[in-house]
Length: 235
Length: 235
DNA sequence: CGTATAATTGAAGCAGGTCAATGTCAGTGG
DNA sequence: CCACTGACATTGACCTGCTTCAATTATACG
Image (cartoon, rainbow over all chains, first blue to last red; front, side):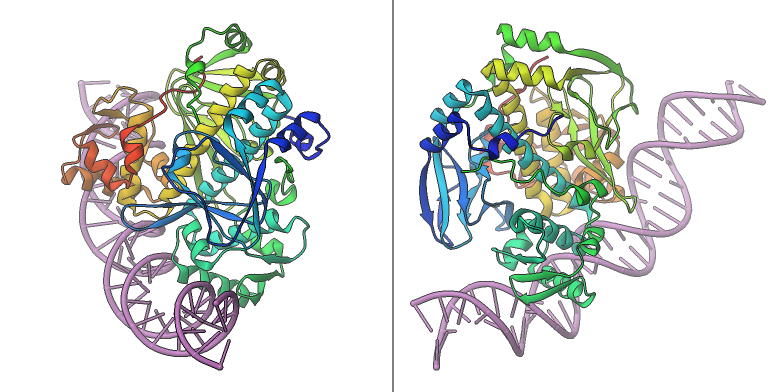
């Protein structure tokens, strides 16, 4: 299947401009909640700048982070399950666009290009989610390695070797399904092995992407051709 | 957001009939491979009858099952990651429809209803995948409980209390990211607690769905309003 | 500058992985 | 018809890696 999406990045279509016109962009600070679980809503959203986490708190008190949302990601636009989760802003000065679902839907029905953009965004989200499913069975060190690789790809943009994590260790732990201490120890061990270098708690210098990917058991295809970069809607 | 998809089930649209006309349905036996990882392909697929597994084998030899595919599920139609996985048939007498991606894409561009059906299918797949992500941090017993609930919803159709698993314990283990022995022990314990009753290795009678769901930490919303049932394309 | 939160590190217990043995069943061939 | 084979399944015993608990240090923010 030919990689679509590139059409999304080039915002030259009049329809995509129409999409942009539908957006209401708001500013948030770290800790703000975009929406609470279970709340019915007619809106869907897209991250413009900053970062957020999609969160669920289970009956027993355990917290689980379903995904981190980065610039270009769409969310809140599907299925009844979707609203089981809360979305909370992580980074300061985060900008999030809000769309009316009905308008989006109507626009999608009118313009195949928009429909395709949404499809692409969801498919990518699915691909990421399924890839993480692969890591279910992995050891903690490999999970953390894989996480760093993912963050490098998503936030870094360029293949620079400095990865800045917008989220806390607790967030990472709840994302990977391990204890905070385990995350800490894994990072310490990676540093001890010379794979990474911690310049600060959330500022990581990757010495060897190869070693990271090896630990993450990243299949070669993914390691070589990293992302269908920013195939999501550019807002 | 209003639950779409019901439109998909009612195959009264001429466009959906056109979709059906694009399909080439083939028959498979257990163990057959629909496609191998890494193979480029211009086709996407839909399960008509039976069951399959989407599989990846990692460098270390560990095998991971990304998802089980049941009647109505679409697969193979997106993103370059998709083709990292193989799809293998589980059940005997499995029928799978094959579509040409380009034709599907063109049809989707022409008919918003078709586009929406695909979008819905992917969104549902995403919802399931993300829900499983929630189970990352759960204990083995809860994972198995959640698995049984999922299978009850997806294969059962009716809320009958007999769940027939089309897959082996090994498949379940690789799906949940635990050892085969752990799956076996969890099932034994559930039976010992009187929650289920094993009529045969793959034939489970559920005595108490409530107890199962409780163990699975299923949020009440999901427990009450189980599935946007069969919202996928009915072939 | 001081307090709350985040992060790291150590020590101990246990859930689940690993290894090994046994049981069950379907298919195959003598 | 029965022995043989190989895949699947269950159960027990042991051991490892992760969680948990606890204490200390670092970082961010008023």
